[in-house]
Length: 310
Image 1 (cartoon, rainbow, N blue to C red):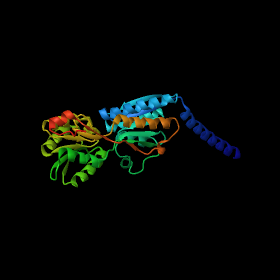
Image 2 (cartoon, rainbow, N blue to C red):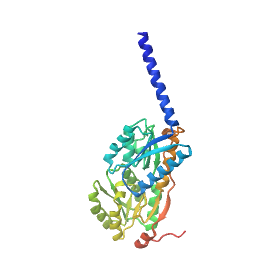
Image 3 (cartoon, rainbow, N blue to C red):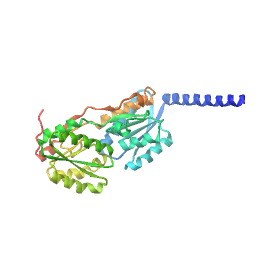
């Protein structure tokens, strides 16, 4: 019996030592593998991924390390889990999740592989107040009160005017933003109406109704709308209804938004520190960037909106 106990204890000790050595070896490795799950192809998400890749490679190169990056575009929220599962099967050293559905899929799939999110609005809400220890990242959240006030000032909105908010009901972050801007506008006496959809085939008719009924349209950081925002832009431009998006883009007459490339860069810096063994995701608070104001001069001229002169 004593021999058996001794053998078991020796086995346990061996496993512990091997695990410790594996952790050390990973931090001391010369090459790493990183999986990127991006929800869909879109200008903002593409920029965030590019910023991440450029910065991660540059930071690791300084340390004499290399990285193999596997970038996969899910194309649909339901396919994020499939993409993430390929990364966990390969036992990648880190997962970057670009957009909320990707982040949720990654967090649900692993508690040991470091996961960094980007282009995610609200981590606390996404994880119901308990962000997993292996998860951190960057947020594309912007001050909703400043966005609302910017629309009021630039469009000269007054009490009784109606603003339409277009968003997809499948995206929880969009509902958070809708509730925030609704409260802010209504405090000024401005009427807010939600125009929601679950299938993109509904977007054209929905936008037409919104443009006919509202003085302006607000679009939150909604990936589904963003991927189809040319539909919204065409309809609203023809009807001379200004569109404001919280993520910027070509259809937005003016934006108070963050630079998604820089957002990716910040995420890349985090990833490098984690891979090099200097930090863990738990060491990082979710990072946000300071937004800047950008006007689309051509669109403003078409809509008759005066652009402030600096």
